[in-house]
Image (cartoon, rainbow, N blue to C red; front, side, top):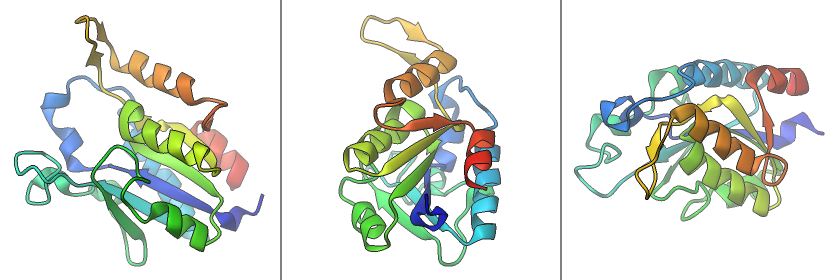
Amino acid sequence: MDKKNKALLIIDVQKAFNDKKWGERNNLNAEGNISKILNLWREKGWTVIHIQHRSDNPSSLFHPENDGFAIKELVEPIGGEVVIEKKVNSSFIGTKLEAFLKRNGLTTVILTGLTTPHCVSTTARMSGNLGFNTYLISDATAAFGMTDQNNTHYDAVTVHNTSLATLHEEFATILTTEQLIQKFF
């Protein structure tokens, strides 16, 4: 595989996810792992794409006028890195992501970010369906606990692992940060 034909996607690593309203979270080292991957990516000069969720609702944590809209400092974009805003879970819907990847010959995408069962999963599914070689980095993503329609609560680890299981070998290849480093660096 040509290592230059890949892009690192950092999905929704925004301050909004620091809010206590989300509840318990797994993988508190996700941002650290994303930062580690990002630094290695930058050293190689490979393509980095930051995906930023933007809400039109002024009361949303993701509204541009609220502090939560900002990308966390640990993975903040630097000059020349692409930032794509989205309004739905998929990084491909209503954005220029697919066109950008194709125009630049980027056939492989590495997915990191927040949260595993929502924007990361939706982006992984679409990426796989669109024909991109898709890798999702399990310890560079995280989930929050969730309660279902029957009022059954699932802890963050269960939500995260189940989300990964539904993607593995169908929509994406699931790797850890260390496995990614061994494979690409």
